[in-house]
Image (tube, rainbow, N blue to C red; front, side, top):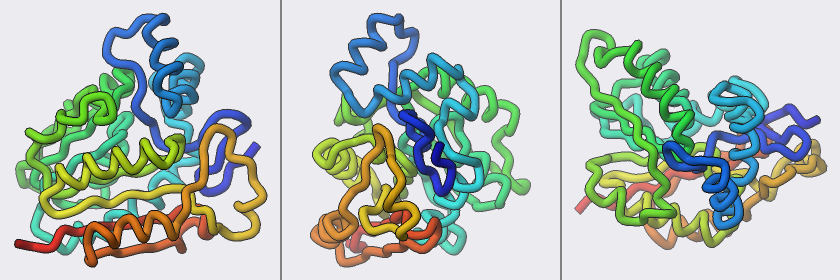
Length: 253
């Protein structure tokens, strides 16, 4: 059993919740999704086993989940900027929103999307309890069941400054991951912040099996990012080189 830095436990991935079944799906539709969208398979199995609880998110721990959040927020400079409109792709139960509020990172609006309807329902319930006031200031937040890889035009009408993608790429092949990133980069007015499992980790993580997750080429993702903008930030220190984080910012017109 692997438990360090967001590794995989057995054959089940320890990564953030990913896109899965649409609302009100039945067993047959879940099976169809698993057959046609391979990056969903492990998450559908986890939801069946655990329901909409933290274990179904498949993180090794809250500490590794939040270490990734902290790195992306810091690399994007979200604390230092004017409050932004944020889009959280693969939001699960809204843990990033809770983390932002707890650490008083201000934002103007937050939209969380995930295709696992059960997780979105939990996120909506948590958001209702949190309310719309942050340190005495108003900020809006909402959650939707949505998979951009199924509906590539769905984000076009959204008004977002930053897209944050934490753990979403871990069960995707390179083609699906790049397609998702292109969609998100197009939707973002300012930029995107994302992470993935690096193919150049420390020796400890390099020997650990990942189950259905996969490592991505760090140099390939850096090259991909730099072809789209020279304004790129990169870090791979936060989890022993196991996880890599990249921020791409558009050049201001």
